[in-house]
Image (cartoon, rainbow, N blue to C red):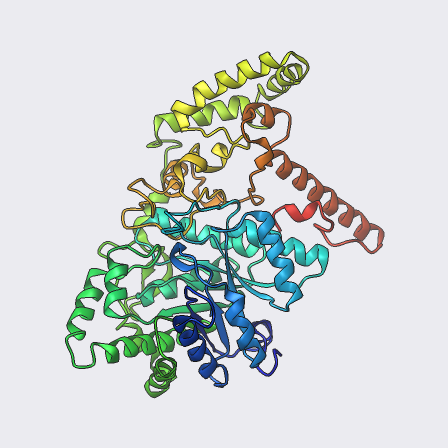
Length: 545
């Protein structure tokens, strides 16, 4: 319990209730400023309502500086309201995020939604630089380690952006969802979308891939004309309104109520459908008054919860040519358990490497010959760089210059020293990803699989396309979390690879620790002794659970 209302952990792990959470967008200025006071007043009015189980406070949404989430949350907790704080990586490095963990834990805030965050779009005297020292997966790993090693009790959620139009966006999003769960996410919110078939597909994929027990809250963003235009024009990363939905919104906006009835009705239908599909709750957001949230819930009640199958057919605002993982079920208009036939066909009869770019095939060949741990020339490289360690400094500097002479023109290398080229199909996250994402794609791509910044293709979509001809696209995010060691910046990545100083070496060490733990457990079972659980200890916590 949290001063009166059940905790989120209790609701999602010990009950089967369909819960209601709302998103409160924080504002600029101190808590006593007019805008902040208005937001707080709305939250205070809803805090005492029995239908509102959870209030979520944003963390500098859209990359703009606003009041911190816990400032507003403190008042609501005092009123007995269960709260969740968003925590994004765009404004904090890993030390600040860890310090934040201690502060939140000390004050009793245990519900955290881990996000990479939007690229900043404003700032004092110009646009600020995004930090992105780690990403949402790294944040989950850090807080999970704090839970395990320091006895903290964070109950962490994460986001998946499954409402995407292309295969090379959808599948990596699903794979990253699995990686988030592997590293500590215990509940999920899906990103904004207005397509019931995609909402069904997400739960279906999770069930078919061993994630069916993870509770998911359905994102129900209540539109208005201005927000719909912004989403349609791709001005809000990850949020999309199709042309057909925008046309309907513009028509409805001509009515005397400005379209409010339509917007609330659409949200109510989404709530009913979410419950029918098996979501564990509705996560309602938008620029709303307190009465608006309650009106939407009343409309949902009026529809009747058994009407969800009929209502699902009315939420079908897909993009033209939108890609689906599963085939359509003509009886329901939703998804079946059959793979999309075109997708299934693309998986058959692949010729290894056929269609992959020549540059990638060359890079892959070099990696498998020289840089992989089991490569024929790896031991030779190790001996070479062991000798470099003992040689005069100019020798190492010369080899480092030669390394950069190759990697800069080929990969736009930024000399980070802890290279992730092999992790992302030889695409550099430092130079080619606005958020330096090393554990999978963010959710901010625009139509055409374009990065939310500029007109370049998302590197993770490109990596997927490079790996699919080799049949390796579904394992592209397997393995431990990748967290860059900034101490290696401006040092030789080749040297760090051969001498086991980079994150690849840490992953090998963690895997070996896990192997030993499993062997000890097996030996203990064989002898009838009590064994430690596999993965126990600090070293193994860095490995994939």
